[in-house]
Length: 303
Ligand SMILES: *[C@@H]1O[C@H](CO)[C@@H](O)[C@H](O)[C@H]1NC(C)=O
Ligand SMILES: *[C@@H]1O[C@H](CO)[C@@H](O)[C@H](O)[C@H]1NC(C)=O
Image (cartoon, rainbow, N blue to C red; front, side):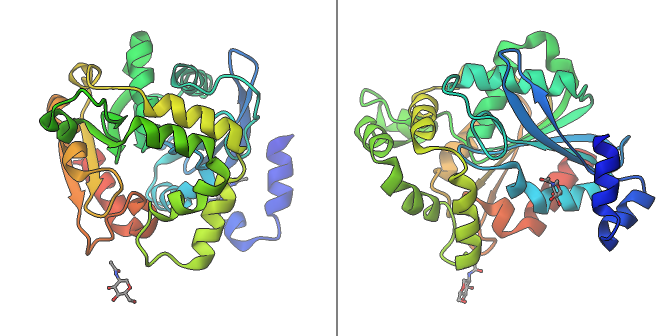
């Protein structure tokens, strides 16, 4: 029924119609998590293409991956994007805004969609969701063939008891006070926070659109999730990752490039690259320089 509706909706659109002829028509749907929450997903590309799953950062939406979805689906991959709990077009319950639940949601999604031989591309908190999932679901790990971790660090908040050397490795670009202040003033802090994640070259219309995607989640739930994710430390997970991994950072990112690189040194055999300032290496380099980001990821998967 949904497929029929999609075909009818597409009938007048040239692009969509040609996609139908090539057998690559997208599928939009929902999966229901084990605690009863509906998560929105979107699949594009040939049905039997190699699987890729993109996981957004905190507050971002599946639609923000469209430059990747378009590129990789045209290149023959089967691309899945989804909105995490409370994000985008997924259901926003009043509970579950912690990464153990987000890992369970991810597990529900990839088992219900039966994704195998899967490349997971995480961005920012999306990497932490993948790390939590890898940690919690060892029996399901065999579904994953590659990981790409874009711009996440071992810990967002610095423990005041760390040595300077530990802080340099682990990231820790927030103090505990900054974390709580930001969460308490989410409504006012959101726009400057998002702005700091891009280069100044981002157009106003792109900025407004990204902000509107962020605002699909309420500030209260976003603040709860922000507090939880910021205080976690992932360093014990890295040495136990056993699939080929690519770790990507950026010279202009809010996440210190040296701490992103340190993640790569902890994952056995991981590859690493830091996007330069000239390459618009911001926290959102996948949006600001999709050509460079996409070819980097494709080379890694197909090498
Ligand atoms: C599904 O993803 C494709 C590729 O990014 C996009 O063009 C389309 O608008 C998306 N559909 C929905 C309903 O989000
Ligand atoms: C940003 O825009 C300025 C002015 O248009 C330009 O000189 C600069 O090269 C741009 N930076 C990047 C990284 O594209």
